[in-house]
Image 1 (cartoon, rainbow, N blue to C red):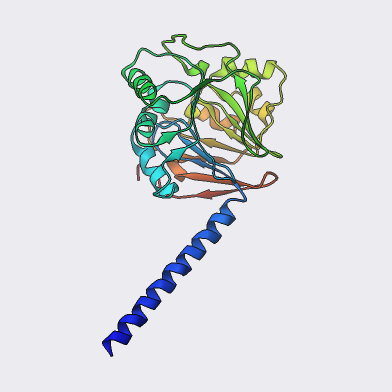
Image 2 (spheres, helix red, strand yellow; image 1 turned 180 degrees about the vertical axis):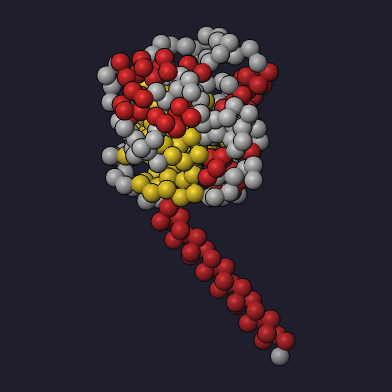
Length: 292
């Protein structure tokens, strides 16, 4: 009798495993219909993971510490150790710190950067790791259109000059600014640019209009001027700022300039996921802050 029970139990286990595989495949197939953008709550810094419908993965900045590894571990299947493209908007520690360990632990297809050099321990370690792993490096050029996937492009809008191998004590205004475009959907990525660069972009007369604005510099009053917000005309704004951070980001002036726009803040709202089919988009929140 126990033999039959054991056989029946084995059959149940096999059927359950098959069912799990089927539903996993269904969920993966459903997910592939959308461009997915994850704004991670990694404290006071920036980290954004973009996944295209064909499962290409682009990591934009990595926050200040190892929290990004936890986020990637939850987002990506355990067997997936490959990231197609890493983008470093600028080499400040709150964007660069976490990327060092990501590059150590994942296979990276390529790195897109402005080429700006910093005389810091973090930057020196970053450069050493990238060179040791022989990862291809691409220097962002204004006006360049980078095809990330079918109908998904990254349009580089800043910096306006070639900054490769140029050293800066402060690199916020050297931040890469780019528009992520999927059919009729646009996301404007701003790094940590300040008002001088914002106004220069407005003055160029280029089309900045975007559905989503990733607010610059964690909501600092140095950025997000009224004219810039009008030029972008976003439906929503996302601010990456740590809960109860030392800098009191986002500042009141920024919130006032965004007064008529729904705002999502990682330190308050947790991870923020955007799903878009190229025409519409929807928002999902984790409702769990890193600092809670």
